[in-house]
Amino acid sequence: MSAPTAAPTGSAEQSPGAAANASPAATRPASPSGAGPTTRPPAPRVFLARGAEGDPVRELQARLRQIGHFTRTPTGHYGSVTAAAVTSFQGKRALPRTGTTDTVTWDRLLGMTRKPTRAELHPTTADPVAAPDPRCLTGRVLCVSKTSRTLSWMIDGRVVSAMDVRFGSQYTPTREGTFEVYWKSRHHVSTLYDSPMPYALFFSGGQAVHYSSDFAARGYGGASHGCVNVRDEGKIASLFGQVRNGDKVVIHW
Image 1 (cartoon, one colour):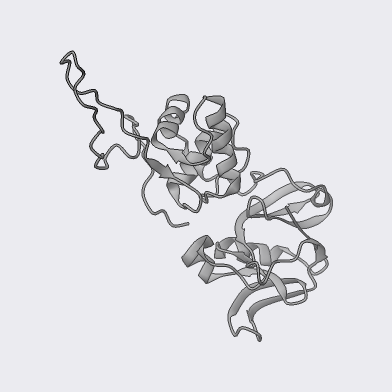
Image 2 (image 1 turned 90 degrees about the vertical axis):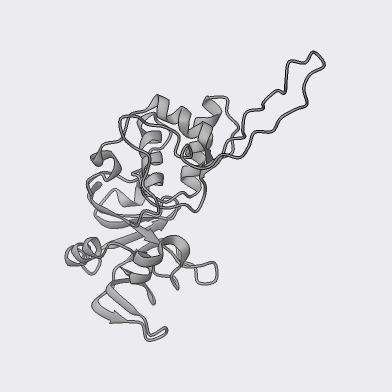
């Protein structure tokens, strides 16, 4: 996953916006007593908000996870789940519940957490990404969560591997429900859109789990035509080799 900017780390942690040029503080006229103008503190600056992606978001998620506000594996995508976790953190600290990470929220979080380890930022693929749907707990299952935007390859309730995914747009939505893999096509090309669909695992009509170079390049700025896109080619290649026709696919919120 590409990182737009490096997250603020190091032994002397500080607000990520500290290096930015601050706006001049607003002032009031001198008081009648002649004590001079009173300086107002600058308003908090927005650091991260919905739609942001990259390592700073991954660090935010890992730090929130350390204190129990984020229960998923860090994804590096600031969506509704991350916004809800930030809102929860803000509410517990009597901060405005905006769901947006401003410099005050970030500084408070830094003071309560430690620098995440690499294992926390990039957990092993066997680490659960979310509480699985009950339909995913038995057998061989591709368990796909639209909430966390993750696919977990599970066998008898154990997560074997996990990966980031994206779905179709509102005009070509990815179907939800329980399906089966009915066809595997390693070098598939869509006959409808004339686009490559490597490592395709078809589960419902023309919808499949497959690698997407567009997802790898553009992230969540794009969408599929209904398929479940995977951005990590290595992970989908390994998954393709393990999945069999007849394995279950569960797509849920």
